[in-house]
Length: 151
Image (cartoon, rainbow, N blue to C red; front, side):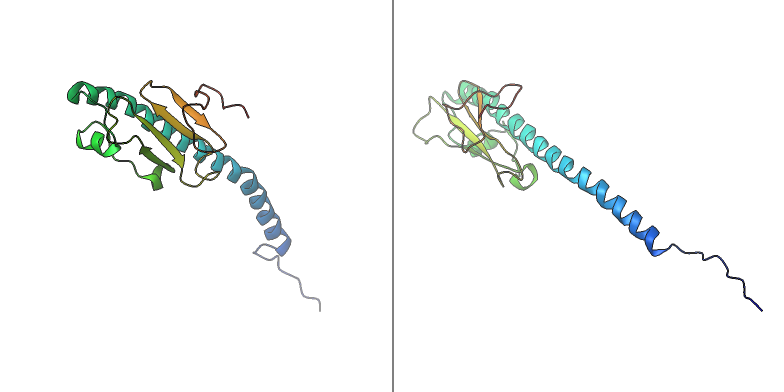
């Protein structure tokens, strides 16, 4: 007598492999977009942070008749908040020497260039934010505008 086969209740190996392949394809499409979005968010946060320096420095100048020589001085005066490079993906610094109180400049550099951000930023007492893709930005770098700097 012949036995009847019962239909199996599980998935076949081929069905599982197809599902895994579809998930891999979706991940391959989504991950680069996610990384690019994270870099763009880090850059936007860096621009916003150094833009606050401009306002804070003008307030500091009004109060103390000189510009602050470090972000620490702005922090002590309660004009800026402390920023975590690990969270923002950028390292910030106001770099002018303590003796120079009539001008100021600062920079923001990616914590991991190409990973946490592509652009370097620079700002000074003029309030113009400048950027560079090649390395640290300076006063000769092109101003930041709605587009990316030209190579």
